[in-house]
Length: 105
Image (cartoon, rainbow, N blue to C red; front, side, top):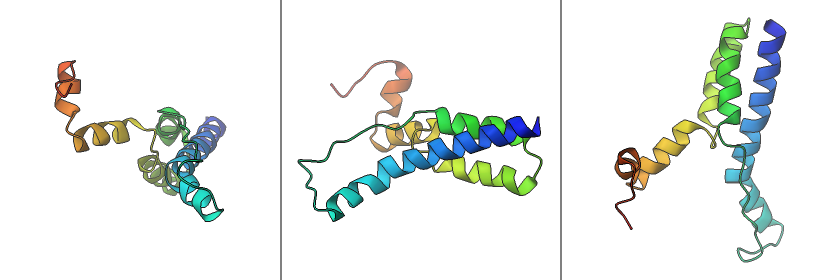
């Protein structure tokens, strides 16, 4: 089971780091290389996958330090459910989402 935990951890870490790159790093790199906002193509990461793999790996990992690292790393996954809820709250749409309609239209 420890091997399954390590595989889930590795896949979750990879997807999480890809989501962080796509959300925060890719655009500044594009600009630094001479690109413009008009030529930048926004792309999406892998929603829910990274956090899910990391959270599934936690009980299977043998190292306590690695378990805590998986928890900390999952917080950075911009495709995670916690980022979705946080974004909905930040934009003021969480209440409408929970009620099942969009009051802002």
